[in-house]
Image (cartoon, rainbow over all chains, first blue to last red; front, side):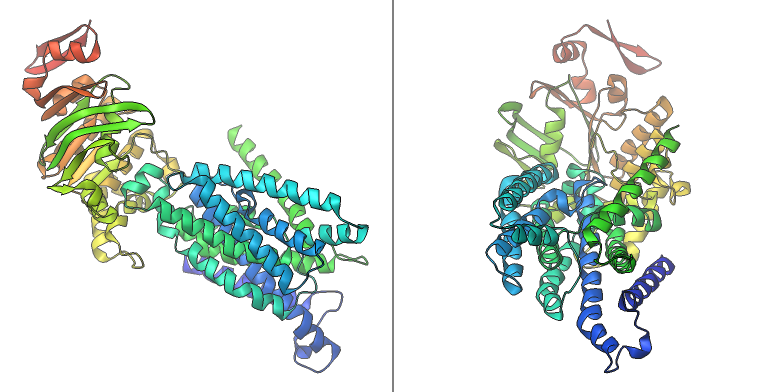
Length: 318
Length: 252
């Protein structure tokens, strides 16, 4: 167990180093702290980008693991409960209004906050996981429709392309300011999410068994909604929508550390950070004038991943 | 002691437990039997505080059940639900350890005492040899024993079991009945919903016959288990015969 965790931490360190070095310009560690252009790229571009990769990937992996445990469904992830799309809607509104930087961040967080409040109101105190996911579907669909509507109403093609580029999710050209804005919300959200472990374990046996073990389902729902809202909302606010991390990583980790939900949380956070850093390094290395958006790269990883799962399933069934 | 006082439970608009008053005692097995939809599961869920009574009240050792803190209640009442297909393929030991959740502080780790309780429960349910197996690799009978060990690990005063014999073959039914009986003999209160009338007749110290949410009979087994009462409960012809000193219930 601890060996497996050490391997994960080592992989994380490696992918962090790779993320710092890799790109159109390779920067060797010797130049990291020099006054050369390499040192400038390192401090102004690569370091914030790598740090964001860690925290964004971390909270996406973590929230995916928590949501899968809470909904008792290995196909759940942050996008199905509507938080990502609501935060994205907030961001799109900001772009249309010509707001950027901290303002955009605030709009996206407001979108996430609204989605958490609606999620809790719609699913109700006694609703439980099924009502929660249905309410999430309502929000995801609605905010997706509103986002599409806003794109179609955009005043000019530039606004449209700016919105679409932002929606696709990327870590490109982020600054330390982005890290500073997002980190506190993510930390708070991660604390909420990490504190759900024991309740998620109890839910392995179903809702009645969990409640009979003294688990407060209302509080658990609040922790899940608030944690996802803060952590994933902040991640969308600084990077746009990066899908599949929250879906894939807990799957892989389940094979690696076992299926017990509480034991899955920290490995999923580390795994999410590794996957995001690795994918973000890869998109920089793909030759071409521009850069493949991280969100697209992640989806491109997602499809073959699920194809692999499907192949395994059919092989097992045959 | 668990007292039900004029207890009524609604499931949505439907009245499923209708004005029930009775007292359950520790050290005894109380078996609830009755036709489908008689309110057996709802009654058990009400005693487990999973559904709120629409009228009347439940007292646990004289205290209002709804006033007992959830964690304290969980330490005193263990509940074994009917369809407990685990969502995740955790190990047997992890599964049994779930029973200790009410005993562990919010931010504390399991103690030596918790580990010992888990081992004892696994030994009592005869699943020590399965401890490191994943629950999805077990047979139905083994899985039933694991679920039962989870309840034992909680060391609760009460065990509420909803159809613990479902999907078990005769030897595993016998083993489960033995475990329930042992739990009662060790001083726990055991309340069981059963569909197997002969198993109920063997296991019960007290019997509750439930029909449309109302008690058709409650009390010591031999006083309650009559042909007339059974026929009234199930609306069906039955015969009670004595074979080798044991009562057997035969449908006609």
